[in-house]
Length: 426
Image (cartoon, rainbow, N blue to C red; front, side):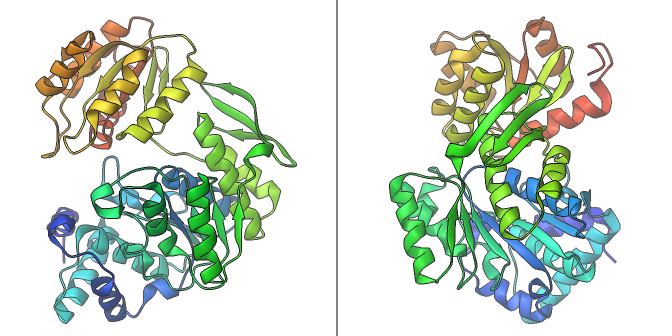
């Protein structure tokens, strides 16, 4: 019997970049496991930005409506268990281990070595089927057409969120090409809900939906209004649904909520459950207020699109105010464009290298920022970075960002051993 540590080691033992893309391995694995993906109703969610937030919103709404609810998202912030949840509770360690062992046994039996994401996806399908989940929100990992989650043949609903340039070497170098990859989740006769996009992107969605005779609806952004906004969240109006309280901050989250409302209504969920679900949603690390005194924000912006969204949220919540950034980035991200977007908001930067072999050296990042006139300090540990951050912020908001790896490490360190120690009670 595997231990949790052994299960995590097994899951992480295959790098997807060294494997061919395609669905054949996953289809063979599903067949060996007796097709657990066919035993649960899924809402399948693709997109560049917002798909995880929408999945979290839908999961909360489904729970409010009384369903036994599954949620599958990626990546995790601290522990792999976070990726698959039932009723908002991550899979227990011992169950994670048994699921990994079951997938390994099936894969070994047919001579297949699944990638990390394929293994986790298979484990989630198994877990939800074995626990008789009634309705689950399933987030695509990369793209859509060839993503492991796309072994689904008959989801209850397909959702496609905002489209931006990402993984261009894999998905294509235009928004339209990337939209085509995302639209690969569309299935025959299955309704599709879309986040509004550029005319070219929407034309791709319309064409693919027509080919599959799939009814297509677009979230009604002109009807979306933010009634109020603060560090505790925002209050929204969408069409005839008024005074909707959403604890997630930012105009982008209001847009994600509009898509979630549209998707929920398509599934026949009553507005009372939609309202209650959105009010209760939690999505860590997305402009998350870790502390109000002093103000400490954690946001997982890790690419230029996310950095632009973070900048817009700062404009809204802290208009005209500079912030102190605590950040680190990965070397395979466009960190120069990210920094160019954040520099106008910075009073200064504290740099901490993420715990990842892909991390960009802090000296390289410091050199770029200093060349653009920024004040920069570097730290060697989480506690040193937090000490520096709160010392230098001195009444200015402290914003943790740049990498999900760094966010998970610092957020966990803050919540488990640092919060309340010297800097207020949050």
